Length: 341
Image (cartoon, rainbow, N blue to C red; front, side, top):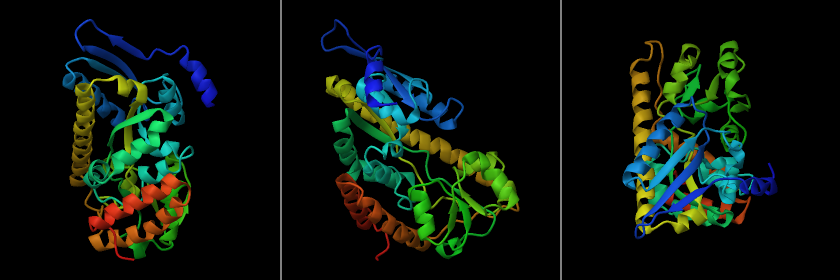
């Protein structure tokens, strides 16, 4: 949908901002669209965020969180937020890399993170939040904060204990940064939809797959045919942004802004904890013939070293991409999270 059409739809949209009679007492009834469908665990968990917002603001802010495609397509929410069709979105930042390539790099710098806390620390203490707003605010959005479902595990029919085992490996990986990094590591990536992962593994079309977190992989029976999962994951962890219409944000008093920021921080820890518990339960309940591989710090560093070359290529896409690359790699190096090249 073209931006002009988005703006036209905004004429009939109801982005509600009601000011009550009490001194400085403002009430905001907000509508946010999520990037997952109603049946997805991430969407279900995110309903807790709406409760946190109401509690922390004393009911002065309410959020209706709608599943993907309710108002606009998943790739159109940025324009919809800017136009006031919806007040905010709860979505994977990489969906908007076509508008600004830097968003693809900051959203999922493949190989960068070994835990959700590392990514959150980068956003809050390493310059990531300021960078996100520097990129997003000109488009009419304000980045409140991040969350993430955590590190995606890896499913494999063959043992994978390090980078050397990736050479020649036929694996499913989505197009973009994930596929580029695995190809650079010597693997043979194939672009397949998620719906074909099980069948492709079962028939030997592929030997491994980048797919989802451990618990989800287990629940879908992938470990029945691919008995060498890598956990915790070593490659992919998406940044899920919680952003709001900038004009709405600017209209809010400071105490509400603070409460909104605190709600996102609290929710991120809640989501990470809940999904980690599900992962741990799935690991504990794994069949005796399933061998879980946990990569060493040295092997993770090797993978990051390979990934860094692809980040450097991605940095050439735009001035902001270069800025993301510079700030990200400086942070990783300061924390000892990247090998010396």
